Image (cartoon, rainbow over all chains, first blue to last red; front, top):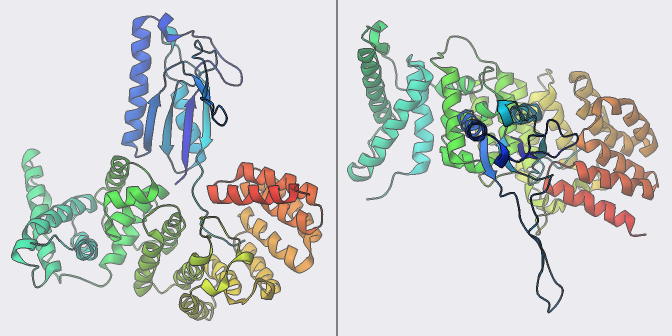
Length: 137
Length: 386
């Protein structure tokens, strides 16, 4: 069955809605409510038999690339928290793309500052399978 | 002391489950009871030896476990349950127990993924771990999917005849999923379809079996040693399994002779014509096109059929005619990942290499498998070279 990666873009995405600011600026109970919602979504996906993986990412990271023959790798950063950051992801195995979109919209409704829905943009990316089922037109 | 033979368990457990369900135990409870009996067998048989009639042993133990469960349930709820599900005495096994089980597992109330998982577990006798590996999901997720499916069926009993079309859809899904994972689901799909065929006389069942055999016959040639996809016209046909082709053709011919054509028979007929050509150049495209016309009449709602038909039109009437026909159905195929790939192929044959390269690149971006993406990327790169 098809797999989809649901990327949480936090404040990023096509047209950011309702800037909730960094979570460190929220009231503690709002942070708790948000994190509880993430756990609940994970539990719901486990219960529905659609869960593969969920991870949260640290907000900052560094860049690294091959430095060329006989040269050390080139690193850059770490950069301060960018406006557009990937906060984490859910990886799901579902019956249809429609179901993946439904889950993504649900993820987006998690509470943010003041308990208002975050309206976070969730990027839905299909995971490629290995090989097609048939070789014939 | 040798461990329990997993193949023996795989064969016996679904049959024991079929017996319990036929005797009137609810599906979910019966499945639990059979699992407990299998665990007991795994403890006792290696020491005591396998009983003379291992199926009867499993049925007896599973049934005892089922009654224990029902009784404790009843006690817990402090109420009498009608007849405590005491079974109607009957023979250990009837030939169609497994088939009834198959119909139950492919029940229309289940989502496709649930029906597939439950069928492989309850009828195929695969372990939850094996099914999880086949679909590349965590074992806990697959266990949950199966247990939800069991709950959905609840205490479903055999009160109505099943729908063969629903079973065929599930078996076809198992077959197509078989190429992705590490567990041999293709062999499993073929085995289950053969089982279905022993009890259901429907030419579409034969059609599906033939379709599976005629596709599977090419399995050794469809990937090269790097694991890259080899298109049909480039495959080393000496590596096709001629015995499997012969069986597929025989099954198909007998089915077609009964004069009730359906989509699986027609798809098998198309596969047979490909398999029948000693070289790609000898492919009987006019006849393939005729079968596509019949397939479109059977499935007018499925635009993918029109897409595949366009390839045949390209071979019979030339790429320009095919491209025009594709334009006519393109609206219904918007967003389908193979539309650009077919257009690219036809456009290259029509001589426009620049446009073909662009279409191949577009097709690669929309591919749903790594093998297709790599193949289409190489096609685009090949045309972009000059």
